[in-house]
Image 1 (cartoon, rainbow, N blue to C red):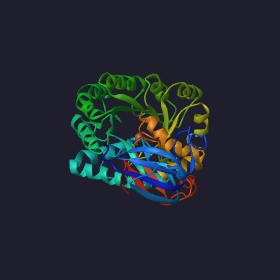
Image 2: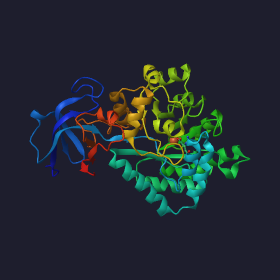
Image 3: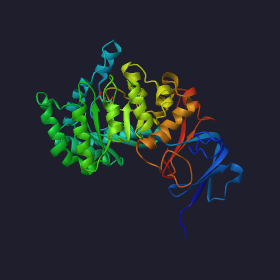
Image 4: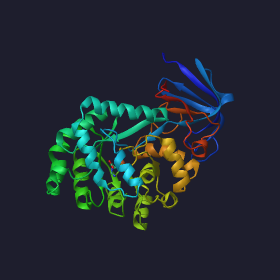
Length: 393
Ligand code: NIG
Ligand code: FE
């Protein structure tokens, strides 16, 4: 005997299910004049409104669109301070470099646990109001055993998708001994951090960690049960993407500078290419060519990369609009990548879709179609959000 109550969301003008076997047969599985039935924390039925089963409650969507909750698979939310001065300098012509990370490391080390946790909650609140129902977040602004472990403990209070990024840059404390820092990251730091994380990440880039260091770090993480994801090919071409595919990383993130071998690797492997348009926007960098990546057969995710240096946005709708306008994606592709693509980048099958059995994560838009997310940039179109069946906005 079930004790949960069922709720139907009816009169949805356009429902994005991300199940190609439903609706119009496209990857978005679009159903017009649709309804969704939620039972507890799950979706139990999707289809045309006229065929919806009887339920305890009903919510009339009033001819608006519904999309799956956004899955933001890449953010850096455990930090203190901000980098307004650096952003100002950049917008006056100075280039972005990974060096600014040190400023945030100093501010983060000096902050209390409560301050850091309140910061995470604040950016998560912003994200939720913009439709994000799942997010990943990382350490990487502590760079000592204690500061990295505490960042992960704090992150784990807010999400299950926690990533150990001790290898963000070589700690300033080891400026003259990068090999010693890699030993620390793969030894005592990993031991202290692994219990609090699901993933391990490396910034594989000139000025951060080279291919051998990155392989050593990711392999050590794998041996402790953490699965890899890689910051790859952001500032210039490098080995990150190929290494990510070699190690079957869940995701290679940034993918801004790719050659044909990288594209072949992404097309053949199961590593998702995660594009982070907020970073190119906020650093005035060249855009990745999403058409080329999609053309190679890769799975593409879109994410915010929310961090105080290179991309201080928590808005998935903003990233969708940028991906369409500046990376060459169609609105349908961008919305798929921001939902089902993010789920693939986290190797999750319970989120990023609105089909029976999925977690009931839904966004009701103040618009008749999901396309408005790109068509009406900067407009607060999120009218209501359900996460795991509970209305949270
Ligand atoms: O994803 N690339 C490395 N890490 C961040 C930037 C972090 C920062 O500048 O604080 C990124 O862009
Ligand atoms: Fe990042």
